[in-house]
Length: 119
Image (cartoon, rainbow, N blue to C red):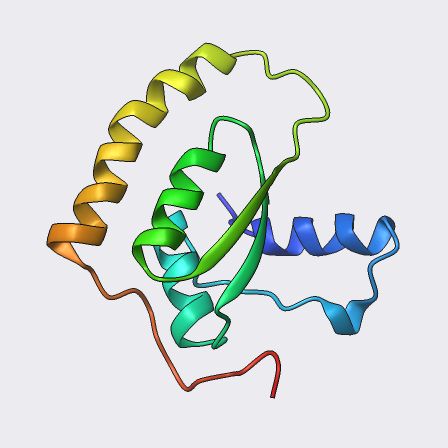
């Protein structure tokens, strides 16, 4: 199985008129915690706009807030999901896991040299 969610999102953003130079891909943001952490520590961003699914948005906002990243969220649900109940049910333990990561475990994701988006 090939993972390339950032590549797919990049293609979609380009198709919607976003300029390539305005897009930064993060292939090490494998989960919400990693993405928010890396936005802060690698890309050195303090204010973000989150665009994600309705069921995922509360966890993404909680995670950014817990990592001291100022976030505003927008829902990106354009089409209905076949198994939407499953996603909502899945979010219950995912929210608890996010809280645990922020306040207890505090895992360090894949890091590297800082790559500030806005020099």
